[in-house]
Image (cartoon, rainbow, N blue to C red):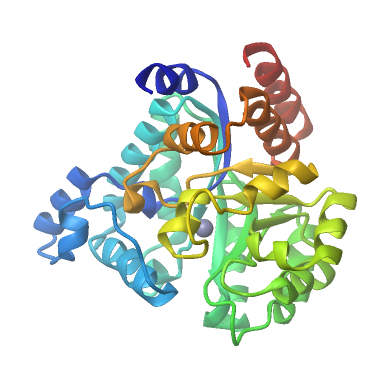
Length: 331
Ligand SMILES: [Zn+2]
């Protein structure tokens, strides 16, 4: 097993769905909690392999991490952990999701946070490897979404290549954000959205039809709707799949029963992602090992997932070409 892990670790990878704060290491979490005099939940402080019975349990854990960040300069520590994560998994291109509203509410400057993150990334030679997707939370409402995305427009560049949406699915309608997504497309940003994780196939349809996204975060509930599956295949929609995340949030009965097997058999355009490695105590390379050992996929499947991710990236065309050449050469 270790030999397989070493072999997979060394191969270049592309990741399009991982959250900034969820790359935090246990050491950083404990350091910031102590420095800022904040208590952290027992399961986080011990680095357990935890599962979550519902979305609220998960969100409370995510917020517990956000709470240890009490000043803008704390983002330097998050950047260091993100950089470690990218390096140890040999990720050659990463789009990192960041949901800034909780910090904007604390009075932090979005511009300053992005500057701290990007300075650390540049200092470690990873400019051109790590980019950002700025998220809003669906359940926070359109007004917050407009405010957050206006920050993106005002900040310009800052290594931000796209926008996204997280948060509750049930009881909230992604279509409310149609005009906002269109505005961001017009400004040159790519768009993705978490959907079909807790919401059913109808939630995915809404994001495809109204938000006009070409990428869906998770999208696993699409498996319940044959028409949707055919649409996703025919229109080459990219699914950002995160099997371990779906297992830990009880979105599938087991790893072996994850719909990724059916997705792969159907030739669906998807990539492999870790989503929240620091919370799940996992790594992108672990995800690759699990896929090979659980489903008996050969490495060609993982290579294709990386080619899919390169093609679905929000990066400029020249960057995508470089990624495709590298993947084809080294896998
Ligand atoms: Zn996610």
